[in-house]
Image (tube, rainbow, N blue to C red; front, side, top):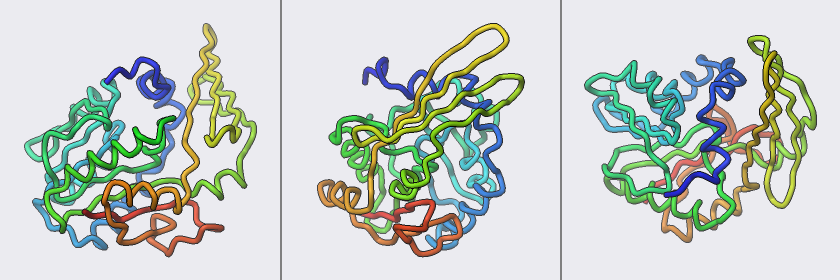
Length: 244
């Protein structure tokens, strides 16, 4: 798969990406994983794929709970970092989610809005097909943790400046042509770079249409990491529990 023109292929592989988002809460991630594992009644020793794992914060915690975990991410830099923590039941691989999975799992997690990157709907559908084919059986589950697009658009912070490590991040947000777009201008004492993030507007209706096309079943929806019921107006997240 040629990813040279994909915005995430360059932005996610930079040190600036990790500096900007270094304050992402470990406690929140661990709370979510604890709640999710309990709800899904996953058993120790079962296999979990953390698809688009980044530097592996969810993978590491899932492994500490007793699961056999594989973390997969497009960014080789992230995988190189995560590999420092690998062991017999925790492995990391460089992988494009549009490519076929080589193994099957009891659970596949796609977390922290790691979906909806692609301009063409067919590529989103391909990701779902790969997830479907990567599930061991009809008892296996997939989880997609997406943002609540309607609330995100309604509460869009159009401009802000974030300072991390003497680096200034000038951030602008907009909603254009069906995408939530975040432009990031990185200014260091010696250089300036510009990147962007683009997430497709996907509400529950649109995602349901994706699932129908790929033959996946929507089992449950949640609106936050405490697994409260999804509310299209007030929920921050759209968390989907899916099976074959």
